[in-house]
Length: 505
Ligand code: F6R
Image (cartoon, rainbow, N blue to C red; front, side, top):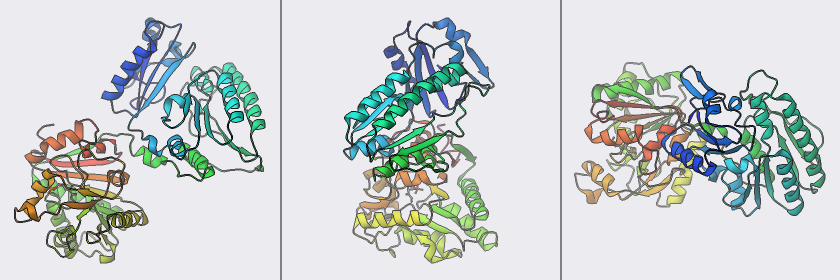
């Protein structure tokens, strides 16, 4: 088990085996174990026949900080190649096979894609040999009246890794022949999308992926030759397929990238005052860099010092809020805006009343709207219409909650109505004369999905009471049991915390 040194060192781990000596099923158990303890976007478990441990050891290479087995050099691709790709935090619900499968359409995945992509509502046929996989595709095209069929020829990819030009050309010849037969079997309304795999030009002089640009062809009985331009991402190609079936588009690449996992930046502060100044510095940098930015704001005790600092800098003439738009994380359901403990009042008291923000640019969920579905839909619409959030400020609940996203809830929600947990009611009663009966029982909150779509996230935490949550968020497993742990997968997340909050790390 080591880095994938040929393509994505540090981003993908390879689990490589000589499957004459270790059964692939056994190797898979190791692969799952590696997947469960690592946060790289991909773990690839694979093996081949005709090679032995010594071949793998002989192919070990060190590339700077990374070490791995050079898979083409080890010979593992040459004979009866087996593999499974294990993604991280991949959500099948936003992928085309699940979207179409759920809508009742027969979905077939053939070849590598059958191993890589979840297909709970359809049929997956993993195969490697090019002619076999395309022959099976042709049979399904003929059998099915209406279906989504996705076939992935991977031998070209393997020939590219091996830099074997003759074998690559041979596989292309086979593919060409079968694609012709498949095209001839298409019905009037069928559409064929042909896309090269991710590069791997065998003549380029290295075995790495060359995935910047790959050819894409769309064919139907009604199409006339024309340039279809450039699809920026594979999910754009998926969107083309979704469009054809008039179905929901898959999650886009930018959204996927947000889950690809870069380490959280941790900024150590001496104490609460220091934490507040550092956080305010980051927020003010955002406003200076982009005066018309969208700030996602939080209430609670933690950010009060940062807001006070921003007000001070505004009074000195260092900050201008006139172009800023704000969207707050959450609001209690059922409290009038003017109630001193509504988040609307909180925000005005601590920030908005003291700076030159345009009141029309201030947004919070409408806690006075008793229709939860309507209130949440409207708030989602506001967030989308302002173009998403540039910087989202978050406090952390003692149980790891962010916004009012309490433990155990799904990661994929946008704004929704929540029942507050006993722990949160207990923690918040200090704002209601210490009387927990006065604490509202429900709130509207931005969901984790919305928070994860923010371009930057800034988490603030102070005090011993937050130490356990900080530890779980920064270094615990990514799990809905600790909602803030998902931030490990955000590409630009900074935690500013004081010594006490960081004391368990
Ligand atoms: C605030 C919010 C909450 C708080 C969290 C920490 O809008 O949604 O998630 O950030 O409960 O609260 P404090 O800062 O009071 O410890």
